[in-house]
Image (cartoon, rainbow, N blue to C red; front, side):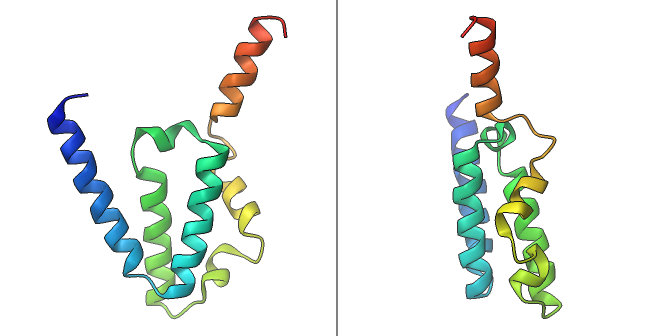
Length: 105
């Protein structure tokens, strides 16, 4: 990764954070919880950029613009919402488990 790529990545992240901060407070709280959950679970695609997180912000912006509460968008079980988002994604946990299986552990 070049310095130019790192600078561009930081610019994109700052723009993403600005979009989150522009959301209503309840959406910001749920977004931060989703972000923590996803960073903990570790879908590999999170390491490849903000695509998944940007999609969540898109969804939240649409929900807020239409006057919906955040739980109307995600459902009452936010963890299940997250799990559904990444159900077909490979996680770092999956990679770890596969590597242990290959080593016979």
